[in-house]
Length: 157
Length: 382
Image (cartoon, rainbow over all chains, first blue to last red; front, side):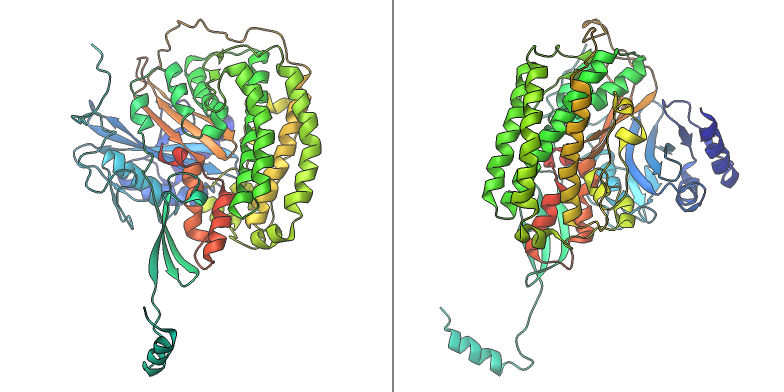
């Protein structure tokens, strides 16, 4: 972690002390408890010293063995010329997360994609529908336990 | 058949005059100006667009799921099929992430050739866009001119890589093959040819009054809106925000070459047009600085049979393609196959800009705006 990243991290921690550094990432990454996500995200965008005004990307990772979904947000700040990765973990049994589409409008469609492929329900999302697959598709294909009788995939012994 | 006279009589007899109502029109998935299988549901009020609802998924192949069963070297093949016009840059993004994970150091020869090939691809991608923009607006000549010159570049790439579009040239650890002996000579010929032709194109299309009228003050995207929609590449730069990864976080040998980042001022379709034409010139400038002194060395620093075991960490490789920032998120799990691969495609974010800027404009302006966004649909659907 560079000196600048350490300063940014201390600035974030001053608003929410439960934010920790995410060791499982190759880039500058923080982990936020899921119930504090919207609060921290709002601070990241609106704080004048941080100003992470651009949401580059949003994705989910299925950790089946740990019973968790990891949600990853990639933010970019023009002011700091810095990219930051924000992650949060939600239980696999109750896959509910708060939507950030009020903070960044593009999240509306990025979250629709994640809902479509992972089945994560975003609370306060304006229009949560499938994005790529048909509306009557059963199951969520990118989950690790997804099975489709017509799936032609290599089974390795 | 209803006679006009009787219709007129009926209108006059209706209290309150003629009734109007909004209606829906399906544009696509087989519409020529959507450049692929994109469907836009338009809520129309006469000729005016009130709302645009993009419907996706017609070319969804679930590349992210397939990639979970392949190793780092094999994933590169799939990325060719996303944004097929900047396939070398897509290959590069995956290679960057895998190289960061395995801590592979590259030699200057690989970095230089990668940069030259990526810039050649950028030129051919912009030339194709230029030609297609013309045909979208009704100028058929530009289509043939753009394709003719693009053909010269794809010929060079074919000579070296064996493929015209899906290059699969940049691999983790280096390149698939060394450059063809004629590569340098041919690139110089193309640059000399393009230098004259670009000026000709400016007089042909850019200075054309019809094009100016069709593009100026059409589809205005303010910089705040562009940032909040997460758009990147020429779409964002056309709105006046100078975000270019080649300058901000130089990879390859971009740090050691001189080039400018063109930015627009108003954010209308014309600015996006101008930014791309100027980018062709800047790409030529980059290649000119590199082509004469490609360093000697190996074209691959890794043994081809080496196992690419990814550590249990996540990596994010990003490059500036012809359309914006392509990010590749790879989560390893001590195996050759990654646990999760995600592609942050530039077109996905750029597409949603249309829902913000098209309402209020005319149907014909929507076609012009869509064309200057330069979308490649397989990259959105993945």
